[in-house]
Length: 169
Length: 156
Image (cartoon, rainbow over all chains, first blue to last red; front, side, top):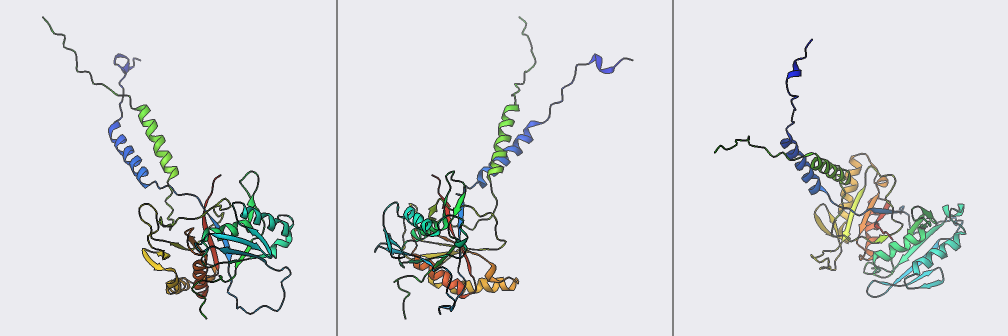
């Protein structure tokens, strides 16, 4: 049997490239324009249950750790006081606070940390970034690889702000 | 003299490498793009912290509030008053109470307890801490008790 094609040249089927390239470019431009670069963001959880201000009858097992943040006139940080200890000010003050918290809890993951609370008392005009750093310093630190968080104290609460316009009677 | 009549040669460009690259680009942009609606306001300059990690579980419903200042093109603050940027409106922080009431009512209509809805505070680094606490107080008065502060992840 003789094949028919033997006599002919093998015909090359050329797919139509132009429409595909059109569509592909459209897609490319669409994705380029819809791209918005967002910095990764993280959360710090704070639980603020509604409580009446009257002191509770049963004393908690551990007293709250009190962190006092004092502000300058312009809203920058003046000093941090942990209980009665003055940690001062400076670039390493939050690392210092972190260390002090570690000393109080003994070791990270200590079961007593479940019952412990940090109370942050800040001046009214203190810039929020310092408060957030204080919250961060009490919450924990990163491990040496920088990937995992070593938790210190999870429960953070706020005392009413000191000073400020809303202290009307 | 006889001119050699050769057929018009169509110059064929090899499309294959270009299409390869273009597909690569499309794949890249598709992976990078997130269509997730984040309720972020670009006027808010978040504080940064190394401990700020994206949450592992995301609540189904959350109330995101952007607290910041009016800023000009250079990012300088033009108005010392801090505002909550809420659905296109600009509301002074201390006047946000009625909006919380409204939000709480909406959640209740949807048979949700405002207690279970976390309030995500995306606050500018320069906002007074006292104002944030006042805002939290306003939220508490309307039944919200879970709060979270947002910060950008600092890379060292």
